[in-house]
Image 1 (cartoon, rainbow over the protein chains, first blue to last red):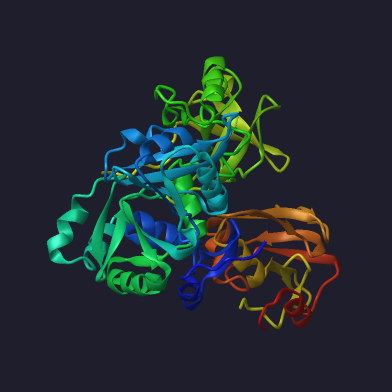
Image 2: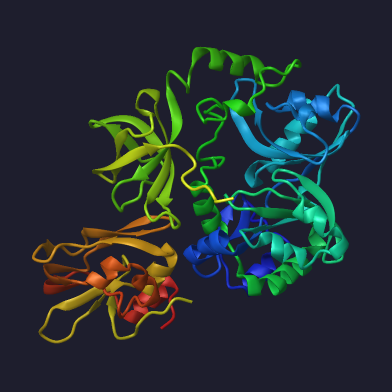
Length: 373
Length: 127
């Protein structure tokens, strides 16, 4: 696989990042200490390069009707300026990707798939557009995405926004987006994120990304902003109980078992890809009353569960861990796992097979961490 | 680049060993390994009085991202473990050759050990 570099690769090198492959991209894993980066996001702010994510514009009179068909959610019900988390499924109800769509006007949406899935999703959207009056334009390769996450994110961002536009930022709701002048350039600013904190994501042409990155760091350092890598991003999202494609979500799984039933709009009048299969799955109760469902596990000892470790009840395998590590914020191990629904009630004590030794974990409600508002 | 302390010997599994005269030898993990693991949050060490066997797992080291076995570079009886490293495993990242040492062994026999230069050559460390 070719290793793609984002437009910010040079900035990461300058900052001393160690790199890791993620979805075919060489991305910063950490700059110094992933724990320090994690705590910075919880207590001050972290700066993330998310340019490996995809950006696909869907434009045309049928844009809303088309996305209602292509995705599991009811995108036509999203107000202009707002965003919606959704799934793109195959005909069997399997999850091809989870993604966020921003409605920018009546006839224009920005769809943001995950890094490794961006080309697949763009291709599928183009394919599913047959018969609809829309244009699907994949701008992933020319677009960078920079996130500022943490309690100080708003204050840091405002230092780069002209005073007369401050209210656009301060009044921006969670899961909404607006065009704002940032560092002298009108850009799409979204109040979304994957860390469990307040924060922003800024879409910017590749050519301008490094300048904005430097400006954010220059203005944010005094307020505790540091660059944060994928290691911190993963521990933050796990604490926030957010699923990761490839870990909690996959083609072999489905929305109901993953706890994403509310994301699937069986009630929308129109057909959508996977609708019949998902209706049958819901009817069968798989992931709710039968089979396995995704739960949170809190470690009662100090050792952590990791992906693919078996979950046991009285020595019998009743599930499998999908993600797990020590929680830097909470101070104990946390994990997500698919377990038989019979053992999925919060408060249930299960074991995880930690390399041959069973250690107790308690089923807890997700998320593990919720910020104080 | 991660530091390789020149005065120590190393195992291929990234443990270092300091042999000082007739007393027990001190064992830890290299900065190369500590840096690769990331922030270390938990360490499980062999018990004092137990016997470890060269080349066999005798504990584990857990970082935020992963967990690794700790291998004994020598065979012998464990005489002491470092309570400071158990209490604050971050010491293994910040001072792997000093305050982050792990345990001491009365050596009966050594496994295959590498010189600092050989270890640095094989693992990309800096002497």
